[in-house]
Structure formats: C-alpha cells, structure tokens
Image (cartoon, rainbow, N blue to C red; front, side):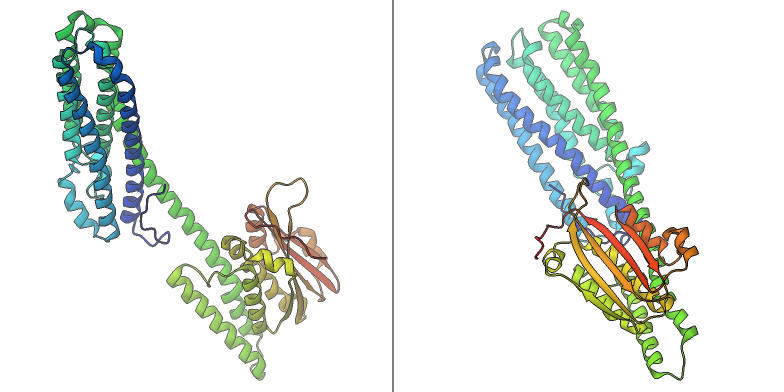
Length: 459
C-alpha cells in the first residue's frame, strides 16, 4: 500500500519539502516493518505461552503479565497509527517548514550527530519520545516481572519476552535515527540488558555464563547500534534519491524545452526570414504560428507541459491542424483497428511521439519543397521473436525533392532536426527510419507499447 502523501508535479516543491516527503515515506516504511514484527510476536506468544504455563509458579500473575504484554502491543500499534495520521494531516495542511521545525523539540529533534542533522526541518516524527519511553519502560518492567512469575527454568521460558524486547529496542533505534536523543537509546538499551542479566542471575547465577544468555546480552547493544546506523543510512538514501529524481526530471525538462525551441519557436523565427510581407496568406500563417508558439510556452511555464495530453488519434489530428500554419496539407490515414487500440496507449508514449511527428511535418514544406503529405497511422503486433505488446507506427510520405545522398549516407544521427528524436525513440526501443529517393520520401516512427491491447485487424 502506498503512503497517501499529497504528491505534486516534480520540481514544484522546494528542496526542504521534497526532503520532508522522502523522509516521511522512508520513516513510515521502517515503522511498518516494526508493526509487522509486532504482529508476528503476537502469533508467537499465542503458540508458545500454553507450553510455558506449566513452568510458572503463579498462573494468575502469569496471566496478568500476558495481558500487560498484549495491552502494551495494542497501545503501540494504535499510537503509531494515530501519530501517522496526525503527521499526514500536518503535511497535507501545508505548514511552513519553520513551523514544523519548531515542533521538533517535543520529539527530540535536537538529536546529536548525523541523526540530529538529518531531522532538521522535518517536524514531529511518527515514532515520538512518548513511544520510546513506553517501549523501554515496559521492556524493563516485563523482564523484572519474569522473576515473580517464572520458575527455575526462566532462562528458557523468557524467550517470547526477549523477542519483544529486541523489537522494542529496534523501535527506539529507529526513533534515534529519526532524531530522538541518543542517550535515550544508549541508556534504555543498557537498562534492558542489565534487567535481563539480573533476572537470570536471581534464578541461576551460573546461567550468566551460558552461550545463549551471553548472546542475548551482547546482542542488545549490537542491535541498537545496527538499527540506528541502518535507519540513518536509509533516511539519507531516500533524500538522495529524491534529489536524483529531481535532477533527472530537470534534465528531461531541458530536453523537452530544447525540442520545443527547435520545433516551434525556432521554426517560427526562421519563418520570419522567409516571409513575403506582400503575401497576406503568408503573414496570416506566420501570425498563427507565433500565437501557437507563445501559447505553448505559456502553458509550459504554468504546468510543465507544452500542451494538453490527448490520446493518439487526438494528437495526430492536432499535428495535422498545426501543419496548416506552415501551409502543409496532411492527409491522415487511420484504419479502424487503430481507432480501437489507440485509446489504450499510455499518454507518455503519445507525448514522446508528438514532437517527433511535429519535426517531420515541419521539414516537409521547408526541405522537400512541397505542401502535401500523407500520414499513415498503424498499431501492429510486435515483430516475431520480440517480447512485449504492440508497436505504434507513424509514416509520413511526401513526393518532394528527397534527402541529399550525402545526408542519407551519414545516417539519421547526423540530421540536426531529427537526431534528438531518433535518440529518444531508440532509448525506448523505437526507431526513426528515413527512406528517400528523388520524388518520394518516407520517414517512419515506431515505438513499442507494452500495455496497448491488441485489436484484431479487419480485412
């Protein structure tokens, strides 16, 4: 189950907000693991307690201890969920980071070392100081209660409670990574280990030399250290991954902006150099192109997208309409089976194809010297021997002058106007192919669509 944080468009948040969201997500994932372990411990108690009951000297006290353990576990689960909802509500409320930072004193966010630095600005945590105090306090109390309840075989009969204490110390270790004071973890772990040793010694002092008891005593300290260090590492890793995601998004946005500047704004500016100001039709076409370029840039600044996302067929018709601004008449050929399958093609694939198709249509009147072209749209099964779903194919055909032989010999990667689109398609398993002779040119765009449902072809 995904944590229901309020997600916004990448890059819209400040770095502090992005780190807080990543922090909350990782914090909750770690605490969910603790809750799962607590559930497993409840199952272990249900299985092992009947067998231990015969060793106890005071069955009534043993029942009271069992009820206390169950009550503490129930309180822990409810308290964690209540804190989780409270923190989510505060995050959704959009409180300023400064206000959140002020609340960290309540939860010990003035921690030491890496943990204290990591929590700065993240506000109250789900595992708060109250949870740590109850967990450590109950661990000590439960261990001492064993001296009053269990008999001479207590070193073995205490096993279910030892599992609980390791879970409790693990929780406090996570809390320390989240910003709880380190001395709480150190002092609490020492108190639990000392209580365990004392209870064992009261029953059989020689048992302190047994390997299982020694492992338990040293394991408390090792567990506390490893959980704290692991928690700090995971929290820092989540923040770093958030930064990396933002950097990748910014790189992608720069690519999109570069393509847009070339395909729309750059094309419009070039058209100013070639326009015949005495031709009203050319002036009107140029005005429409300038309006479209301005609107697309304004949309990008406001939303991070150049235009509204539409299905494949809508995208094709939109590009056909835009081509008229360049005095290019495009005849789209769309078979019925494409209409049925196109609605199920994911928007990211359509958005990748659209700028590439735009670049092709711009080049027809500019390079081919003609004002008519045919656009054939198809959705076909993937080639035999290749895994995956269907493949979208867009073929632009014109009867212009064609590409010069020397340009064709150098390949698409050397064609300035098409190279970036060829690379983007190739990275996604697609292709951009050019076939050209004098009087006939075909440029084909292909892109595999894993989730597109196949529609049967009609004869």
